[in-house]
Image (cartoon, rainbow, N blue to C red):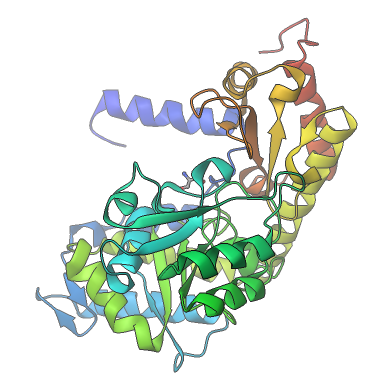
Length: 393
Ligand code: DSN
């Protein structure tokens, strides 16, 4: 019990809200009690600037063990040879992790090639409103207008023309399988470093339902709280030739003391993700997303790119006259939480775009199966088309 009634009440209300709603936010999930316990442990009291064996504070013997254990679990989960790959588990979250990679490997003012935010990229892939777009120049790529999928040949032409120092392969709103081999060929064609930001699909890679980027990438970055179902944090995997530059960029380049409680919670999540039940979870997450996309399609909704290979899909709600913001608000009133999202070549604004993004990672954690998502799709359809007469909530 927290000795602060006002705050405790708010946390309890949020706890109840999370249980009451159908959470279809593609980047969220529900962590286990064990992850929560590690996050709320006394590790929060400890300062540990530096790295295992090289700290600037005393009293870190156990913290060193925790950080080393986390690193080992991360390498093992993705079946990486520790002679070839290193991992830094200190980034506070995804944005500083991407920033650290650029700081380590791309001289200021040089070019970073990343997907445009409005097509499914991320702010930290060089967008002008992010620090990554102020210190580096973004070479933006998108998806093909007709297929709404990445056109790898067009990317190669662009990369050869612009010669970026680094290419980011990784997205927040791209529902299709990513061909990492083709990204490797594109990076090689222009001499760029290949960074894979697998934040959204890390759990799918760990669960064996999306191809691994590790055979092709120089650096793989991931947040730990999306499909991987851990606490909010991030990790940067790098080929050994880059790892000391990455370590220096994370600390002291960008960050101060690592959040040891957060690192311990990552270790817990990595342990959970290595169990066979997690493979079943990852598979079901994708099956659920595909069932949801196919039912919505049957009900007349346009799904961007025609479907999904992952945990997320984009629905073009504007095709039926409902803006993304209106759709998100209407669904929230009925207890379904999604986020409004731009779709490729959107003609509306980011604040009120043409679509919504739907993900199944969180609901699958709660045990939902195909038959349930079919009903969720029918409910979404009924809400958006005002077919619900009697409000049930
Ligand atoms: N905000 C995250 C997402 O929703 O995809 C990315 O950082």
